[in-house]
Length: 359
Figure 1 (cartoon, one colour):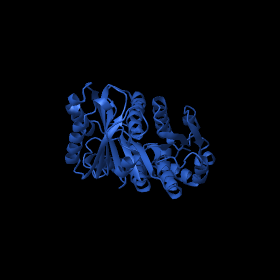
Figure 2 (cartoon, helix red, strand yellow):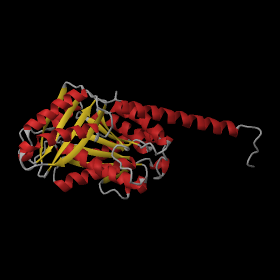
Figure 3 (cartoon, rainbow, N blue to C red):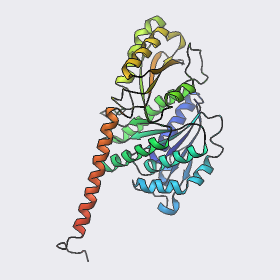
């Protein structure tokens, strides 16, 4: 699947770069271009892909300080300039555009939905979001930002692939180590999905192509991605159980949105050496996925890859009704209310006649 990546904000730029590097290092040629947009000059200095600084008149290159309304206003005001920079980067060879952002900060959470809206106005190809939710320990402002942004992003993009920061972070990692490791895990998992159907060594029996990914995301809403891998036997017949158990792990313990199992549509991709992929195992795993998700549209196929491992990718479309999404939105709503109460308390204290003025 040939795509163009546009990273918005600090996290978005880093993830877009990680995805581009993963694709380049493996020679998949799925990423046709990668671009990063930000309001903070410092955040762009360590990005190796092409970059653009926006909002200089408003914030002088210092970022929006977590204010996603300001981030949205700046993107909306400079949408024409951003689209001019993208002119020639988004070509007819691309199957889709991914707008990548962390939804906790200001520029990404505010700017990404606005940019998706503008891209949909201009291009006929699908415009997808790749959105990262803040972890539970990242503070109320990040939760509130992400809740508001996710609702808007889901409305403006054709579909939003959501990754919960808590899902792919291990307990022994610091916050900084966790962010770096999560970016690498996102690059590996999403990179493999995008590479599905591209020209690689080996020929599979039922190779996944970009149309199956697009059809899985066709109904819009929120999508999630599951991943798991295991060592494969050289004899394909011995890998039937390995394929089915890996698919189970990908859905039940390896998804970007834990506990998001019910879905409108699903796609199962089994990656590995063609000689080690058992068709019986793929079909069994596909039928199990159909029962588990409650979906009548579950596609399945191979991704030929030179490896001694079997990997399962499970793409779920339409998971917004899941318990995990509802829990996050409840958390974001509570954080937003806490912010409002804190602001009102500060205002009341300022107007209290019993308090002395500073001067």
